[in-house]
Length: 214
Length: 221
Image (spheres, rainbow over the protein chains, first blue to last red):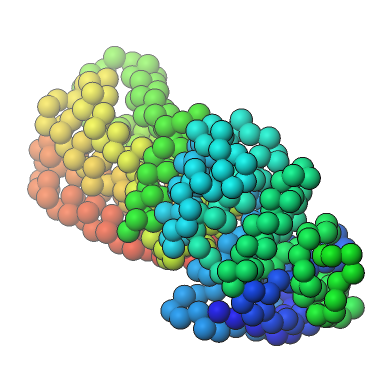
């Protein structure tokens, strides 16, 4: 599948957040979205996930068969979508049932993010970083070609950040696509880059070689 | 179908665990029904005459328990994003959540109604009638409530607004529920007539409620 975004504009309660956002993603490609706080990075991801509607512009999915864009993606954002009263395993099994296209089992997915011991623990007992890793394990329990990650490294320690980088690389190698909003270096090789700038200033997508390994 | 059942199962599980409203609706129902005899005094004739109305008003109020969190809890923690990303249409997501809510509030109320009928001096036929009308009518209450819950999903402390929004809409259900229960205990109207209308209200709200709530969730930002 391919994702094409043209001239996207977002307004929230009449205020223009950003305009003129365009990019295209092919299998195996990653897009790193940067921009100041409040520039609209999370809004952009929310629009891509179908949660918010753009004020103008076009989002097109090509070669995705019968599936809509929402059925092709995973979103891991600030709100982790985990229920505190359920165990990590129950949360993941529910996500797998709901999203379809089963991938790893809940136990295997938690092992991959180094949380095998938390499988039967209620999420309420987990730390912020462990919750984030549980949310990231959701990426593995259902196959989805497009991952939308909003500040995925927040609350993660160095070892977990490396695990995340490995997961992202494996996903790209499998022909997956990534859109990541972050300020951290992610260890990706030559991702596309998009700078979202607030209001009047135009946003631009550039595929220039990243220095310092984004 | 798998996703649908998974959602029903999850909501049932959540209501049974810490922080869920599980049996609270039933306890609240008991409280209201117990308060009335204390307020009215021990006039058994009066109590048994207004008994079905008391039980029905109790059921309407008890349905509101936990209703404000029906979609709000999922909206706050991002689970709603997960449901939007599911191949399951949002209408079926609403239906699954409504079914789970009804199984933990409406159904226990209908089952417990005969027992609570004792408190308001109902006879055997009256108890059975209230139980049957609650069984037919409480789904309508939950479906109507779901629209209000979807509209107030993004509002903090939306519980009161929700109650003000949906209580007027529950009036027809209440009227036909009580009149069917009264008709069963004698009178000019046959039991079947108001019961059929009650059933019709439930069927109409099942369609309007799921579509309406899904629409409200899509609009909400």
